Length: 500
Image 1 (spheres, rainbow, N blue to C red):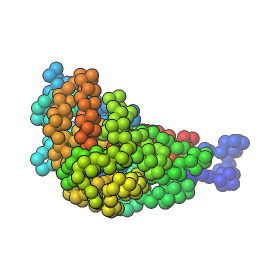
Image 2 (spheres, rainbow, N blue to C red):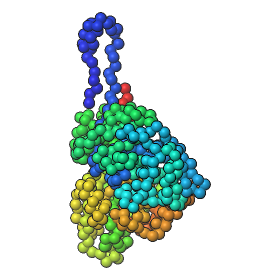
Image 3 (cartoon, helix red, strand yellow):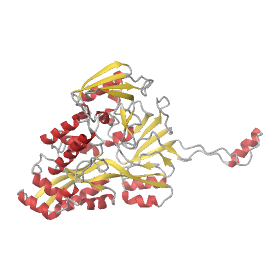
Image 4 (spheres, one colour):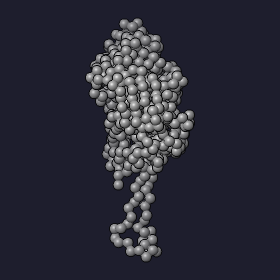
């Protein structure tokens, strides 16, 4: 969009008509641009972060439309949100949250402690559809002390509780509108939902009644462009102001050479994995899983699918986390060892299904991995699936052998302890490690347990660990305030503005 401007000729006519004498250089300044269009490759299946697993939901609404008791900062720190402060009992079981006053939902209703109780009880209920229900498993009781105070009692200490409350799945919703949030989200955030043109875009508008610091933009549009070539064309034409996760890294050098743009390369929480169905024979045999891991050349995938952007990983943990253990050597590229392990397992003429969702890391990476597996004697049947189909068939239905996906939730190694999780690991020893981690509050002890968890899943070759997804973004050179890194799956627009 081109900012509105008034021509010098029109200004002269206006001055003469009004009998005004405009001094040289007194032409009014062009109005600052007050809207931004943000590109996304995937369209969210719905707009309710408490009722869906897709990262694209949070990428639209996290911190923009919905807020939780706490939130993630740009650096990954945990910050106050709807709770301005909290007190923790000495035994670590009771969290008393002091809520902000004067907060309203977008429909004009008041936010108070009853909404917090409703949201947390709803998320942990037996019939909850929350994709991260485990975040709330340790909550024993939620009590309303008064309208601005909530007391949450845990069944056991959980050193990650404030961290858990910062997830998009833990945002606070109102009982009056919760059932409608999938299509018409009503939160407390600095932007209100305006329109969803399915297949095209979601529009947000500035919330004039926001409790906190007002945002700089009047309008934000999230534009969905799945095709990398179309994404490049849209950026070059100025139809998109920023594409935080640009789907065609091969085009980044062109943007870097163009002064109209800035290229922003950062880190994400996205562990990109070749997920294996651990209960599907012969993948239930650790030797077969180990063989697949040794058949994979991570750097070839990073170079071929991501054009060099990405950090190799050997376990499900972000390399930028202080507790990370580099285990890439344990499952290093070794085709001869892969063939020997398959022979030891008595497996030959093996053909596995490989279901690939839309992101380019999956589609491009899948072709490379298929060739690497073929080299050690494993054939694959590739099926490209849309995101909704992947959620139903792979994530929920567990109808797959292999798939490629980037897990973008923050520090989510705990998913390996879930019996019903799609790659079907659920090892009892791993669950014991996670139980000890939940109880631990000492930082050194927590680090030791997180490292033990990393080693355990690497030792069991649960999945093929590929690379940490880089955040490769492109933006108009004058757009400021976008997150360089992704401590959670979000396009936080609360501090975004246009430089004069």
